[in-house]
Length: 147
Ligand code: FES
Image (cartoon, rainbow, N blue to C red; front, side, top):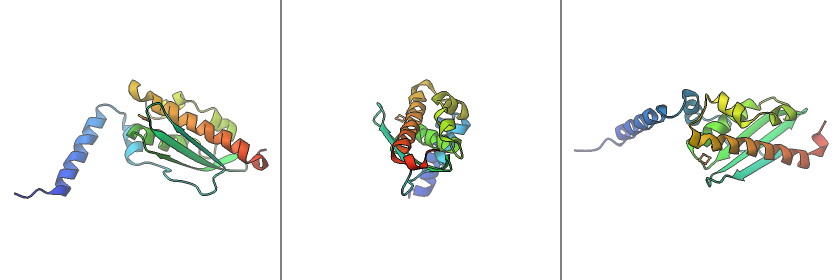
């Protein structure tokens, strides 16, 4: 009897998704499985990259035009939650001024994701810290662009 690998993969994926649904909000699953703004920006105006205590690294890059974040991208080698956090956070900062982006807290990110299990809250803190580092990098790198 042959094994249908595609069928098996589909069943596994469904199982993983069902398991995830018991733990994570629909919003987290949506943003983890359909990530937004993944990748890198060439000649970014600011880059933040931090390895958290969990050992996962998150990077966020921003482009700033007329004092607003016109583009951002993230990369992570971390958990599904870090993908959801990077996806959501890069959407949240779209078209925000630097000051507005700096005011986004990990609680704001948690609320946007409809919450996270306690053991994954640190992933949202990491994402926000990476954004703050990207903004600090922007401020240092691009004094010419500051208003
Ligand atoms: Fe490391 Fe989520 S467990 S970022």
